[in-house]
Image 1 (spheres, rainbow, N blue to C red):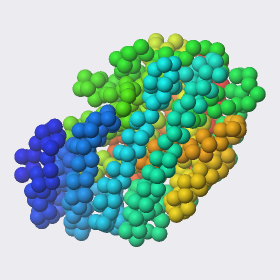
Image 2: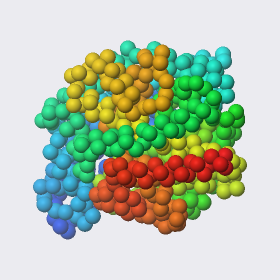
Image 3: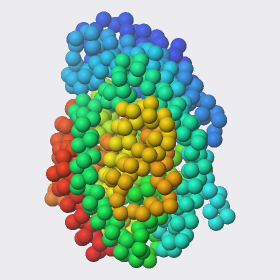
Image 4: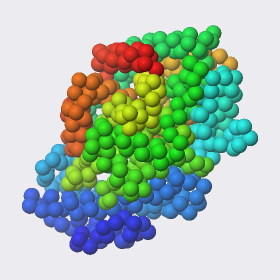
Length: 578
């Protein structure tokens, strides 16, 4: 029967549940045996891949133009009318497999995940998941519509990033204030949306029998290999090891800039990346890595071919097949992401390039996710490709570091030797500043979802964010900017759209630093281990994925101290070259 399924998701973009139902019914009615379970799982995978690719394509279209009413209608229609019955149908099949007692080869981890999915599944939550998706779309619309008038032209906020390296401090301050005031103009709307998110999420947890949403989300996110206390320990390690390193970095910047007080616009303009050190303390023009998106793509391909010929060919396929949407434009959803089209066995990269080095960094990052899609595509069952986020981000952050030696033009990249050193220095500096920012975001969410009634008071959220900011972010003077500081949680889309998706970045950055350390002595071996780990998808436990990649899954201060020492040592070397 599954031989009759369409071979392309483009053929079924308008299919409804009645089109899929006969296939689900056939799977449900099959009597499972050790002999047929593999074929049964492959049939389910064919069906699931088709459904997932349709959803991914509709989501991409919606994010490419948030003002496209038809794209939004089609996406929301799918979310509302298709996701609940599809989740129900999948739940029935999960239960059938688990209750059969069968365990196909290589399916131990997916079965573990299924058992937890069944444990927390409640039909009453299906419409709440739909409501949560709709609230996320509303968040994207609010943020996607944010523009300012700069030098007589109306531009999206992301475009102001080009001002971040303006040597005129007064110009940087004006751009910083303009961007942040625009965010603040949506304060009431975002506060109201936040309360709606919390009401939905608490009801989801209540329905599933959990005391807090944190308890529910921990299981829903498949966090089998670490606990909430591990995260709190990680925060403490960051406070002990990284916060002093960041303070040293900020003090050096202050001295090089020749200013009495180090202010937020001495770092960055972009409200969504407040601690990225994009401002150059020397009076040099901003790095201009490319003149067109085509050049951005071409040079990225050359870099990837130097990292590994196969990875370079993967990126070339994406270019040939139109699987990149890189340039910023009005009404484009914020941020960047990589999604998968599993029937086509292809990834798709979405981002908002504006002509800065940050675009290069984002493309290297998202390409790491794309390579993960390519490498794991050969796994037999869709459930094996469900990689834990804690390792998915090693794929992306690891690629940023593996690609870094090839940023210079003589290696196919974008820059002179001095400019490449400057770009690498900026990246490593931002690794240092990221860990404390991650700790603020994650600690905030721990507070929110264990004190959800208190968090419905957005003034309390402002106060908690400000408290955490002062704990982890030291060396920056925010005097007179208190309203901007305490509403920083508004400007992190993960807090609204993807709850508890942030500590993964901090853990993965520590894993990526270990992959990089291995590459310094054996680049080819490190890339081989990296690709071997990507090819495992989610078919083995998280610590084993790290181990395969040449790293250790860790939260402790000593592992963090080794990584920070390597970063600071390399920063000193690069400063001499840049």
